[in-house]
Image (cartoon, rainbow over all chains, first blue to last red):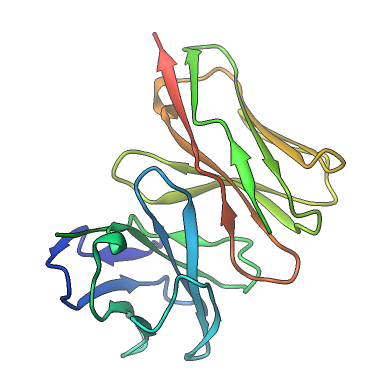
Length: 114
Length: 111
């Protein structure tokens, strides 16, 4: 069964460092998303991406965040200068249709900023 | 703004039915979802219901939607140990393509 894969499963980084979280969406999907879940809190929408551009982003997705689809298969989330409060589980998702009727999620990357 | 609320914990005896409840605020929600998250795994879409439906059944799962009260429930019949997980209620507002999640209900199965 096709699945969304994310790497790494766990990343530890020092405050102020840049991190890149990687995702391989399902191959025929056209819409891509990043969500995050801070421990004990809700899963929050960060950004959606379609046709090589951001289609929507939340207030959380400020200038320190960026997304890219560098090679037609990977979908990355970059955090330029990590803060302690960026520590969270980051989920990538993809769907065929933009209304998220069947959004498939990856297993998540746990980011720990120390 | 949009919000989804659900209780954080539920304990059920093996073989009994589990009922997980959720309330939401956005009356223009188009799709309402239940996702399951097992330890160390991603979010798995269990089932979803369109806002013009009252009920959807899929094997052991029954979803009930009361649109007037903005209340969604997930019933798992004959709960098994493999059902132990966190269950997230979620909705898509009509005009957007993002999903709004609740905090998740941790379902604990008692022997």
